[in-house]
Length: 407
Image 1 (cartoon, rainbow, N blue to C red):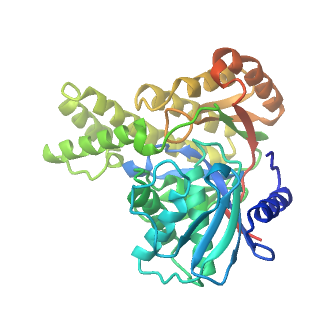
Image 2 (tube, helix red, strand yellow):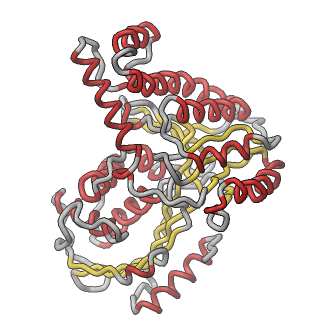
């Protein structure tokens, strides 16, 4: 189903509800966005500052209280799972559901009850999304949408939005078993149309940063490779996170005063840690090197964004991709194929893999007048170089949007 706007989405949700015998007529529709991280990818669990935008690939969910204590919910993306139905407070044990998308609504119910929230009002719901399955944060968008909708039905207000972020992370960490950080949830929940979102973890603050005047007209392009990545718990992401944590523990044991890799900002400290562990743990030092360099690039990128120098933003985005590929070693063959193809197109300002790594989507910043050339290059070259995905890939030309909208 090719949904391109809210009107089409609402119509399709009504059609799905009718087919499944679910009553959402005159209910609410919550739309949650995807995200595009400009920096620092994989920085959240390493303690770095973050910057990104919400993008217009969405999950739409139509929902309405059903006068019972049961949830009945259907996904147009996973029709084989049928209607997922459960009584509030009575879901399978954590990490026991692996193959079904139902682990997300189960997980939301589990976490909200664990946090002491009184849930006694069930609802009927149907949902559909067009977010690529890797790299633009489909799972975080779904978790946030479900949490906010379930709280809404039950009349529960949570004033602290960072609490919502914590809840969404807990759904994935504690119930599903995915070791995600908070980058995706923050970039989606706080996203504002036309603005960049800057998160400072030490101050736990959000600042909105407009793109400087006079910037070259450009587009954000998602490059879905057509590959399917399992959950983060099955990916290189889990390994890289453990490696970063291991180096921090080794450094602390050696007397270095750090709590995360982001604390290694000073060149002198970086040199000392490198000298201590480069011979015994070269791979761990590569991970540290990426985070160290990425933080330096981050502040340069922020300055360029504020100045409207999107060419420099793109160049830093590209350089960050090389670091993710060569130092953090989190990319994948199909992701790099996409990057290599679009890098050769005049007008591509920067490109790199997105998200958890291995599979999923890459992304690019492209001059507006070069978007057609980028699409043509991908259509021409990607099927030749990745024939197994010749009928599965997609190019998404995106704009910045609010992360959450209810209508």
